[in-house]
Image (tube, rainbow, N blue to C red; front, side, top):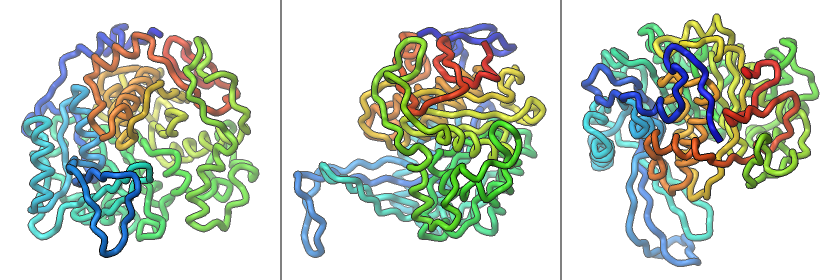
Length: 470
């Protein structure tokens, strides 16, 4: 499957492969030419190898383990190092303690490239965040997590001059960073307001809040309304938004098609639901939609016949994106798991305020709706796959790709990620990834019946009929 590149001042009709050969600027923190700053949550993952098939954790019983794997986790590591491997000059900003785990984080980051750890803030009085991941054979993983320094990260932890010379600022996982969401998200808003004042393009990723903890008491709709006016690219997952935004039928967000309030039938019947019920609402958004692992036939994008799904499934996703745009985000990209990646963008006038990474060809990005299916792979592990997907999309924006190409790049990098057990082991260079796409890498079904969409075969994405670029 070939990929068509639209002509723009940046691309000059280059293919994805040719765009990949544009010289990358790889300097670290000290080099002013680093393009992207990635800040937010970082931790050390400690993963013991558990032996045997019948492991039980019982008080007083010793469980024998094998070797141990230590790796960095969180948005700073996963998205930041993925961007670095894709050839984007990257600066990392996070907070760690002056302890053994903090030393390990610095060592791992430095091993990936000189200067990558230079933006880390080291606290003498707070511990490094860590997760102990227990993965018994044949059983679900168990996590023991300590938030550590992440809980106190705030706007003053971003070093002075951090935005100098950079084009893009990405921040990840505020629901796991208590200081950023306290007081209605005042600190998070200050971080993004400062980035926009510096003329930089901004990007925000979320994580699932612990609805039984302090994050579950946050009015996330109000917080997003405060922060998103300073966010150019918002890249949460669909399940996070279902949990964070109470049923749309209770609010005056715009209708996906008409601009009027949504009809009560959409996401109705959950007005008084508990946080546990809201967590399960994601299943209702796509209820009765079977998964498909069949490659997409030429010209289709479906694995076999279209799924027999209710039209409200697609409509709910579009309504969520419409509300987020109405809050001030310029481009909304929703990660939908095995169903791929959905994009909805604002008007050309709104996109004109995106900062240093603003697309050269604004009309090709404005008022778009795209849905990019996943690529077919043998899944080994999904740790960090959403972060890798974000890295692919942001790389596309930085490299002047079209929205179709950026969505394809996002899904391709995310697909490479799940071919390894850890977050970064499957990430390849961009030339290697682009070569797989150009060779006809098959796609999967999005698993939802799409009405009013058209399959764009050259670019490998679905687009709304009203905005198909042709």
